[in-house]
Image (cartoon, rainbow, N blue to C red; front, top):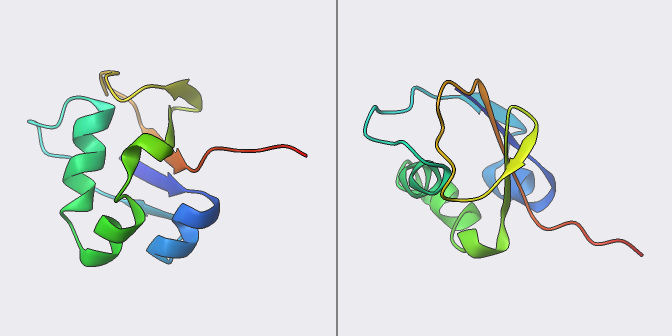
Length: 83
């Protein structure tokens, strides 16, 4: 799966995207974020407060309970504010 990071998440991880093989037991967006946070201290720091993050699967906004299914791209970004 291609993982895409935006804004402060991208800065914290130190890259805009990466490709990862997601284990079969990881089935939801929330499980993916939890698993990804275990992959390095950098990921743990960037994803430490998942409640504050927003997610998209194949460019569609989703919640933490959404099943990954056969999605090809997963994006993580902080809440966007206007002004």
